[in-house]
Amino acid sequence: MTKWILIVAVIAGLGLAAWIGLRESASRGAPETVTEQTTAEDEGLTLLPAVHIEENTPYGPVQVDYDPNAEPEKPNVVASCRCTITHEDLGGTLGPIDVTAEGRWEGGRFAGTVEAKGVKVEIDAEVSALELAAGRYTLPPTEISAVYAAVASLVPESRQADIRGTLAGNGEFRLLPLRFTFRPSVADFNVDGLVGPEYRMGSFTYMGRDKDGNLVPVRGGEGTEGWLPLVDAGRMLPAAVISAEDAAFRSHAGFSVEGMTDAAHDNDVEGKVVRGGSTLSQQLAKNLFLTPERTYARKLKELLYAVEMERELGKDRILELYLNVIEWGPTVRGARAASEAYFLKQPAGLLPEEAAFMASIIRNPRGGWEKEYVGGRVQTRRLSWILDNMVTISPEERLAALTRDVHFVPPKK
Image (cartoon, rainbow, N blue to C red):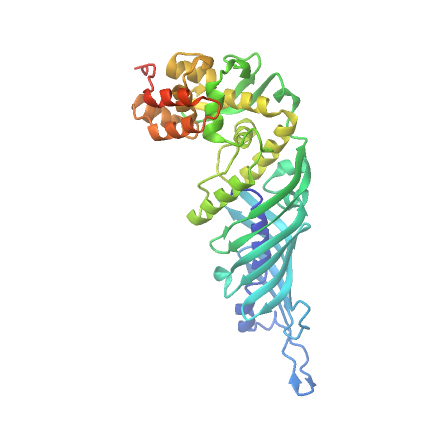
């Protein structure tokens, strides 16, 4: 979603799902699940029966108590669920987790709160049937550690990390199919305990792809073959990479609320994960510590690593690691190997348009290799956009680069 603590919406949805089967269950009036209060007369008014329901839902067994005679300022529905949800976009199973909900249910509308592991969400939703439950929710300022504790089954790293800061926000959700958005506000977010000292200086192992696309262990860092110190990367390539992937790299704290919110909107429109909203730091976290599938679990994990790397490593080291571990084509790993493969140059000698080409294929390096390098179909529009946003080059350098074609070393037969 990501894209960030959008799992908050899942928690809200789980709690709501804990009782929205009430209407159909109550209408069936199963004697073993419905208990009537004694009917009484009070100034000509007849009390309606209270209802207790125990029922299985798609999310797990729930218990619901509904009292239509509750005083107006008090909840008339209370529910609890030992809930579990599995969805391919989640990247695992959330739960089992104890969720409670209470509030007012009147005329097919629920207004109240849902709580799971100390995360309390305010809900306002229309509920006509399980598949038609939809509404809005608000998360008041909440400890980010509590949010991660609620989704620890998806993010086991949260159990070993020291997580600080607060999160608030609001969004919309719908159940069956599961859809939700989240507009977050984050304060004082910090993480400790995940990033080892070897990433500051020295060698380390991460997972890269072989020629067939399979994940294999790779050694990187100082002293390994082809390692490129940032001081030897030159001026053009770092500028092009930042322009293409993360223009705010030098100013953010490892994540971009705006980028994640925009990505969440696009994912909601498409009904699936199509965009991650990741910063360069988050991309590095994925490459160093995680696997590449597009799931909410991975996004939540990479956020923890990115925030800690910002504090532990700093911007220059993050950029240096990024340039060295990302892929630039089949078996082409790291900036030095890529510069030699495409242009028979060291990175410091790249022209602006050459650096812009390398940056342009980061999102799809194997496709860039096949279509643009081997196939000769360079995406000049994207190159122009990257050059226009390379703030460290002069107008004269930019104009000269825009007038030149990109000349590659001929592909090997």
